[in-house]
Image (tube, rainbow over all chains, first blue to last red; front, side, top):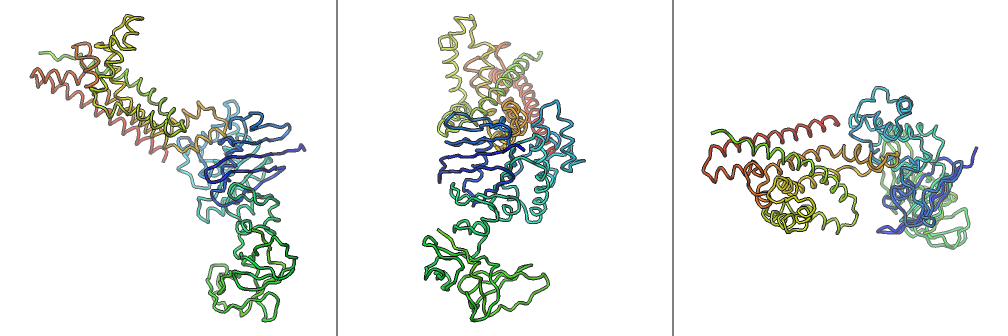
Length: 345
Length: 225
């Protein structure tokens, strides 16, 4: 197997902040996770060539290196020459063209019929060839958009928040469909999202972006298990985050909740916050380690979990069955010292 | 007394040639303006291209006369090099109609272009479509209903052009006397019956134009939805 490599190092001045993104991808799917307006889409558009960065390099190596963009060498390939597929949030199907015309639009005339029927089959679009995009369901539209991209044979596929404009039911179905469709694709893919579940499901590696800067980079499991920074913890879905005061090497006081905790790792001087995931509490006895009392807490019933808010603002989520409607909040809760995530600002 | 058919022929000829020019010029200018990113340049150019529709037609006629007149920059050029006098000739009716109907075409086309989702154009680019194909197959095709209605409005405006035509082309029977001119001349001469015939013709042509416009727009939109 040849060594594939996608190199992206771009800087661009934006209205609110400067975008500075630098990463390399050797295989598979990279997720870019960040709040809306953090520069995620801008990064994708710079890779596709739709937007020009101010400075930097974008290059792809498959058998040999193709430089898409290099500000020093004054290279800037047109999107047409880059062989990068882009799945837009609204799919950007051409409303004036039928399904087959949409799929064929990026192909040269010689091999287009065979390729189109191949794609129609692969994406289960038989019978819909003559339909217009507006006559299709959301799921069918997504398949047409993917078929159109893959028919063109791209080296890289960029997915720009593909599920953000959908209701929950459709979203869950399309996630499965998308992951199946991308299974046979052996190029690079980059998924941009503000949803931690999508990032976790699709991506082997993650990049966390905030205000145009990369604040974390690593494998998905690593980042979710040890977010290290406050914003990263928040983006990966950590519900409870508090400022702290260090007491000694293994003890600290949370300023927001007024509780003292013991931790399993030595507290280094740059730690300013802790995070506790809402699922990491469990019922306890009064004299356990890291115990909280639950006086005056409120509970909210969800279909599959209880959401309990303690008087000091801490969240606890406890899984339940759909037919359980009764729940007595235990008098005390505890959290294992090794489940307390130490964070830097 | 036999009806003089010449105003009808002259008007049809003038309106047809002028819409041909206006249609493509309007498209190109609209496309160019959509592409300009600098807002102040955009506003200034938009002002210039829209001006003919806001100004009194006689004022536009005045400027045209100044430019195309025997001593004007373009008028004198044509006299010196081709020995053609533009003012008070049939081409002058076309020039007047083009200038007066241009803003309608340009504004409709621009509005229609701006309505097209820019992601569609970028999608075309990432799929390797050439800019030329993107323009016709994506931008033009999706803006078509708006472009057609602009074209028909511009056609009707060219057909009805009076003020600037009177200034630049005059009212010479059999040469520059278009339908609106003929209506005016007949009324001025007290021939209300003759004028009425011309009025009916104008109403019929205009109505057909609007009918086509609505028909095409509605059919296209139904097809996609």
